[in-house]
Length: 507
Ligand SMILES: Nc1ncnc2c1ncn2[C@@H]1O[C@H](COP(=O)(O)OP(=O)(O)OP(=O)(O)O)[C@@H](O)[C@H]1O
Image 1 (cartoon, rainbow, N blue to C red):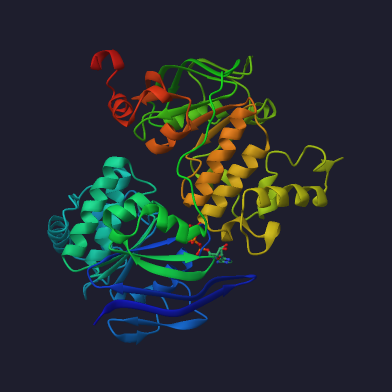
Image 2 (image 1 turned 135 degrees about the vertical axis):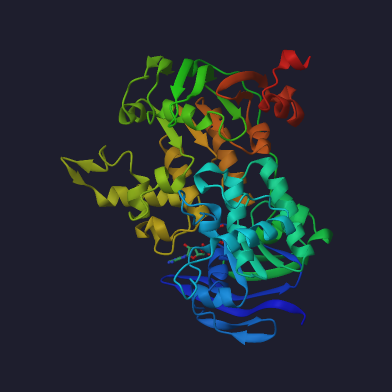
């Protein structure tokens, strides 16, 4: 058996778009096989076919040398194919064991033996270095741990081929390192992994081979050790890609966003921000670096009006907006690319065009005397879609739900930048985007700065913060640890400050 999974000549068409057009994917046993492609290239569709969620219109799938019809996920399971989705499917007030046995057949007394299950979970956890406590409740464990529960679910069902869909998008850098170790351990034990990711660094670090697809078509499969990141990026987008952002020096102007001594309480009634102060000036990109969960979310919520401020003030272009409504803040020139595109960014059942005018539909020319001007809305949306390369099967009237993840993200960023906001709050603006799209969004953020606006960038990607920012503020446990010039710092210094070590302490 040369390959554990062979997908040959796979085609899948949705209304108006061929998502997979004659795609080949051959996975060897015991390898980590990366699947790389720009946003909307057809990766998720191909994996949904392998997992039995979609039926291909054409093509053959062979698993361990046997031709198979994977008519639903149960068939995939029986064939030893498992998938860790980007959005976990876990019940929060259940224990880890309960989540793993969920959906298992009960015995003839109608009960699932959770004692035996917990024992087996412990064994699997140990064997693959997962470090999971079977008795812990999901709501009490970190995101990284929840992902391991998803991995355990697959192992518990004896999966031999594991599909990971952008698994590192939700993880902290430490968790990413650990996950890579786990993946290597899995293949060392004979499992095979298909890894969907946009991060070329990760492909270089763990994958053996990489299959590249572009606009639904198969481009090629390469040996990762012999191929550079640049080469893979070029295969993927069909042109040269620059990883560095070109940015001229610029003297910042007036303070456009001022956060003054802010104290905010989180959902657990704990102070998530303590006397936090920060300024962002016109013509400046300020990056906020910090380990996830250190008050970034609450800070953004307070600035955008989603969370009440306990103490302190927020000023936008000289006006105190601390207690203003969300709408008033938008009208005063604030825009926001939110952390969670599905919860806050888009109304998934609306069309793309309705999503693109979400904040401005009540202004002229989009409405007049209470009536919507469809033509104006469509024109405006089409322009954003074109500029930001938002690919949608039926154009502006496509439902947001059926866009690929990256295209949803591009639509949100396009919508917010298009408001020409005085202050743009960009949270993880390039999450889930391919390198070509990242390059483009970064350019637009720099343009925003060059036009004399303020950009506040919140990102867990240190590379992105270092690359784009003029100034970097570091947050730890809800406190400002310090603020440094991007040109005069490096990953190490920022890393230490993210761990809560102040500059003077280090000296
Ligand atoms: N259920 C669906 N109905 C209609 N079109 C769809 C559906 N699912 C996907 N598409 C379209 O098929 C194309 C491929 O999408 P897919 O999600 O497979 O891309 P992807 O490579 O996973 O992208 P990303 O990196 O952005 O997640 C896209 O143009 C998408 O809009």
